Length: 503
Figure 1 (tube, rainbow, N blue to C red):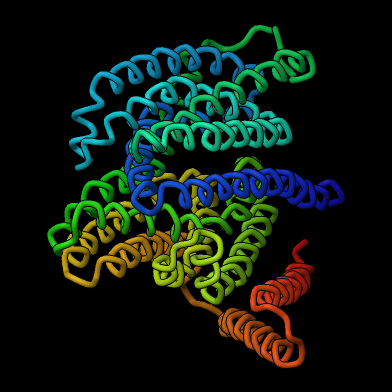
Figure 2 (cartoon, rainbow, N blue to C red):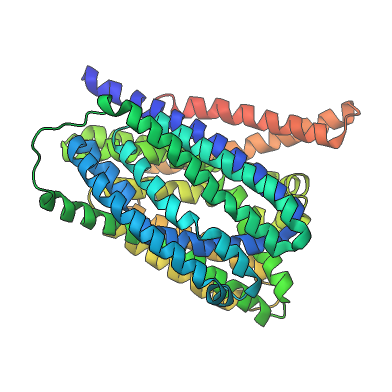
């Protein structure tokens, strides 16, 4: 029992390493987003997001679920995982090179498909990253199986630093030639960041290879391992492919349907940039905590399920769901309350307030979806979250096609589509895990109590800030900062009390 009790704190320690790295990565990325938004405006962000929707789709098609599948396989069979890593590295290099050349040559048709011919230069600047990023993802997946989370975290920080550094250096130089050239210069950082990160991670791997547990003893034929890994990779890829595929289809549908509603191409790019480049960035920012938890949880609960340690499996899963629920509520209330300040003071665009408020529930929904998907994957039920995501994506496309084309409903249609995608896919996972069947009245009371407590925290913080503003002649910005700090302190205190029993 003592050994089992030590496993949960290990997960939390690894999660903290991952979370701290993701906080730094997201913070650096947010600085880059703010810098670029203030320099190229909402239209430039719209073009940036349009190009990245295509890039994300191609990247997922090439790499698929191989990094995750390799990590899960390596967690069980270290030496056999190393052999498969070498095989798939060759595949990644060849596939990435072919796609990179093809995208560079077909940049004009791709830009026309997206509805903005000026994206031609941006697509060409993205093509080198297609070669470097998949190989980097595969190496990280292998090291994830070896539980080298610190090395992975440092490589992500380095990659993001180089990427944003390139953006901040190149965009001011290219902006004089036009917005499309500035955006093209910005996406070049994707390639430079991946190359530098891969070089450093490779050096770490070569230096530490003697202590990574690679065995030279005879191993089973690769023919016995390859089909299993490919099958698992395809199952994972089908689920993960839905989101970038949906984003790419959205990038095609949304500007076209906005123009049907009477919006000009320039304004449609601005609206698309505000929702996808600002509101969704803010809404998804808190999910780095649940994402880091998922990153470390998947390997652990997979091993528990295969070793038939069901009590430990369900304990870890329930704890993860509790963390996702409480954290999602805390961050969601924060985003809703301070949407105006985030839009105006951080990004300098007032029009982003409404989309940010509308998408404030996403941290809760996305966190629950990610955790429940990991639980289902650990149970080898990979088709289940795929079906739920399919239903969510379909509902998103229907809502976008109908509502976005109606005048004055552009922002509502875009936000509602994303929300319904997450609600349907999350509810499907909950139903599959039987978390919605025969609910205990005590659990429902606790869930409602959490919502009321966070509402009360917001009311107390707002009341205190009003009292403070009447007593002291401080600037409004300082009052807002004090109010935010007050809210964060109360949330941290409640999180500690709520999760104390589980941690």
